[in-house]
Image 1: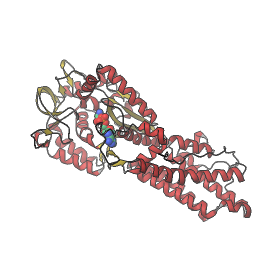
Image 2: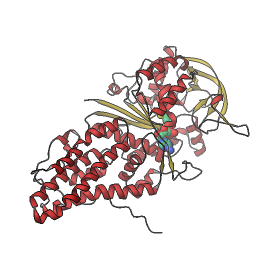
Image 3: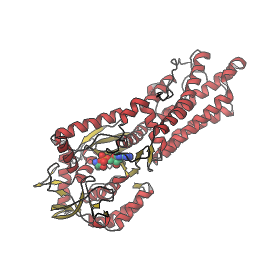
Length: 510
Ligand code: ME8
C-alpha cells in the first residue's frame, strides 16, 4: 500500500484555537481522507507547540505554571480538532518525553557532524514570532522604535548561544530546490524562499539562556533549545525518531507539510538544512496557504473579532463550514471570512443545488418505485453524458487535490451537480410517471448513480453529510471508496426513507 504522511503546523498554546488553525487542519484533513479513500495508508499528524518564551509568558500572565497551562490549552486544541472532524492519526505535544528524546538525538547528531558550535548571540529578537531578525529587515517607526517585518515588537538580546551552521547550506539548498521544483508551492512562496537563500544565510542561533521553558541542551543545561528547532523536530518524533525500527519510520520523509505563509522560511530553509546536516532525508513538499481576515479586518484580540470555529459549527453545522472554507478562497491566497458569504454558499450550493437534487431524486424513487433501486435499463445519450461526467470526477479530483486546488475540485463537482439538475429538469421524471414509467425508472437510476459518484468524492470535504447521503443512496459502507465506483450496485435494493441533508439557513429575525 502506498504510504502518505502529512502534517499541519503544531500550534502555539499561548492562545485559544481560532478559525485560522481550524482552516489549516480542515484542509489537511480533506487530503488525508482523500488519500485513504484512494487506497493509501495515511499517517496524518497535528499537535501543539508548547515550549518557548511566548508560551512561558502566556502561562505567567495566566498565573499558572507552564506545564499545567499547556495541558489546558493543548486539551482545547485537541477538542477543536475533534470538533472540526479532523481525522488525525496522532496528536503530538512538544512537552512529551518521546519528543524530548527525539530533539536530544537530533541535536547530538548535528553536534557530532560539526553542524553546531557554541558562540555568542547579539541581535534583534521578536518573542511574538519566536524569530531573530537582521537590522536590515526591521521597520523603523518615526519615534525610533523598531518592529519586525511582521509588525511584532523586537528586543535586543545578548547572550551565549549555540549556532547551527546554516551558512554552509546556501549552495546545497539552492541545488536541492533546483532538483525538487515542487518542494515549495505556490510559486510566489517558492520565489520568496529562493531570493532569501540567494541573499546569503547567516548561522542560526539555536539555544537560549534567558528563559527556562524548553528542552535542555545535552551536556549544557544552562541552555534550552531554540523553540523552532524543537518545534520542527515534531515531524520526525511522531514518525518514531531516533528509533529507525519504529513502525512509523517508513512514513518518513513526510509527503507534505501544510503551513501558513508566515512560517514558510522555517519549513523550507531551516528544516531541510537541519535534516540534511543530520543525515536525515528532508520532507518532499511544503505547501503554504494564505491568511484569513474576518469581515475585512485582521483577527486580533483587541478588535475582539477572533472567531472560535466551534461557534460557527454550532450555528451553521460542521460540513457547511468545511465546505465554505475550502470553496471560498483558492488555497494559497488570502481570504475574508464573512457570514453573508457562508450563508450564500450554504443556501445556494449545498441546500439548493445538491440537497434538493438528492431529495427530489430519492423522494421520486420512494413514491414511484416502491423505494427500490431501479434497473439500469436502456440508456440514451443524455444519460451517458451525465454518467460520464460523474464517473470522471475521481480522476479529475485526484489531479486537483494533488495541486491542493480545493476550490477547483469543488467547482468541478458542482459542474456535475448543475448538469444533474439540468438533466432532471429536462427529463422531468415526475411527468414520465404517467407517460412512460420504464423511462422514468431509467432516469431515476441515472440520477442515483450520478449522486453516488458525487457523494463518494465529496466525502473528504463533508464526511458526515456525505455518509448520510450514501446511506440514503443505499451504498454499503464497504463500497464508498474510489475503487468501488467501478462496480454498479444491484437493482432492487430497498432504499431508506429520504430526509433532507442540508437545511436552508434562515437568519433569525431581529
Ligand atoms: O506558527 N489565517 O504556531 P501558530 C489562516 N507553533 N491560517 C492561520 C491564521 C489565519 N489568520 N492564523 C493562524 C506557529 N493560522 C508555530 C508552528 S510548526 C513546526 C510550528 C494557521 O499557533 C496557519 O497554518 O502561530 C499558521 O501557519 C498556523 O496557524 C500558525 O499557528
